[in-house]
Structures are given as structure tokens and as C-alpha cells.
Length: 312
Image (cartoon, rainbow, N blue to C red; front, side, top):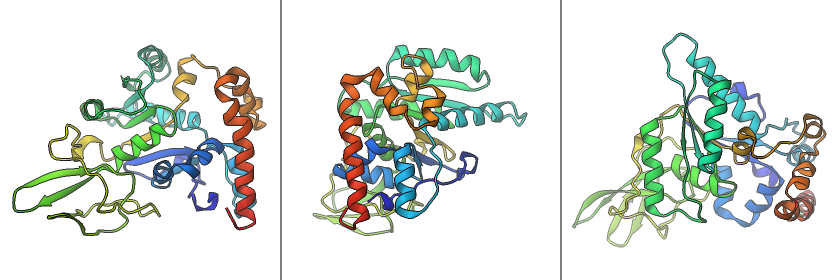
């Protein structure tokens, strides 16, 4: 299964242009994705999937011979912010806007204050969503509206995995359908996790759903089926095509919000370089992370072993 992920193997400077969903894969997210098809679809449907974990890098090399370089969410964050700062001072009159969606107001305030010093030419906007397992339609509508008002060049999402990836995937890959029957002609939006890999006619009872000519990633994600639960026209969550700018990078970076705000300290560089960052985080938050690392690392190793012998 690990071999089925298209991990990014280039420098961040070579990120493709245009609207991108950028996510990361580490041993924990891999373990979760094996049991969560929606999360798996979100990762595989990302335009860019970064190898964020020494175990993922090592296992990929062992399975495929491909030499990857670990690229953490924090690496992505600094790259994007420096890119925006350079864009803002280039003299071409381009605005540079970064939006942080997630975490608490306290953490977001710290981020904004620090960014004002580190990247003074980048306009920083924040939004703290309600802390709950699942967002309501009203919650989502409010977030969509906030994003559309800001029109960010980069949207950082920090809601923890797998919630952030699945939410971002719905945001980026929302598709418009046309419902055409005898009673009405109204637009509805499909927010399912699967991505249409080709134009396909979908039928429901007395309705015909037709996909528009969208340029969508053609990964091996599941097709949306006629049984998919589509939002009704009366729903408050009807994303508009202009919700995201055409050049926006949507980056799921999770704990980086706390790292940059200083509310959680990241491991020293020598531990990161030695592949021991997980041990440092475990020492900081043993009650929350012991299962993820001690049991999760064993699960990851076992899964890779099963893939090696051809039954994973």
C-alpha cells in the first residue's frame, strides 16, 4: 500500500504552479489511512504529498529503491512564508496573503504577532473554527465565507490529522453538479471525498447529475457513486467556484501552528536529523502520544513487512 502513494521527490522550489492541496505522510497517518478510506482518498487525491517521516522515507527506499528526502510540515510552512515575503517585496505590486485556519484564538494571536516580525510584508489572517469532532453546515459555511473574503495565496490548515486533510480535500475538490428534472433546475455541490477521474454521468431517482468540464487530479481515488450523499440546494454549505484563488496553496500542517506560536517546542535539530523527533515528542506528551509512537511504529513496520512479502 505504501508504494501506491505518489510521494513528492523534488525540492519545494519545484512545486507545480496553480491551486494545490499539499498534505504530508508519516507513519502515523499511514496507519490511520489503512483503516480510514476517506483519509486515504484525501491523501492520494492531494496534488502534492510530502514524505514527512524518517520511517516513510526509509520504507519507501526499501520497497522501491526511490531515494526521498524528508520534508516536514514546518519545512513547507517556512518555504511558503518566505516565498510570499519575496513576492511582496519584488516590486511587482503583488499582494501576499497567508491565512491560518485552525487552533485557538490564543495560538493564532501568537502566530500573527511573530509573523509580523519574521515576514513583515505578508498580510496574515486567522480563523479559529469551533472545537468539535465534526463541523456543522453552518460552521463550514462560515469558514468558506471567511476564506473567500481573504482570498489567500496560501491557506494553512491546522486541525490535526485526519480531520484537516479530509476537510481540506472537500474544500479544494468540491464539484458543481446540475440537477435537471421536471420540477427544478438548481445547482448542488458534491462534497464527497472521492475525486472524479473522468467525466461520468451519474443518475439518481428521477434526476441526472452531469459533471462539468473540470480539470481535476486523476489519481486512483474512488469514483463518486450514485449512492453518495449530495448536499441539497437548501444547504447553507454551497461553495462558490471562486472560494479559493486559482493560485492558492492549501497546506495541511497540523502541529506547526503550535511550533511556530511557541506553545509546543519542537525537537532540537540534531534529534530531527537523527530521525529521533518522535522520541522527543513522546517525552513531551507521553499520555497523548505513547500509543501513536510505541504501538504505531510496530504497526507501521508490520504493514511494510506484509507489503514486502506481497500480502500487504
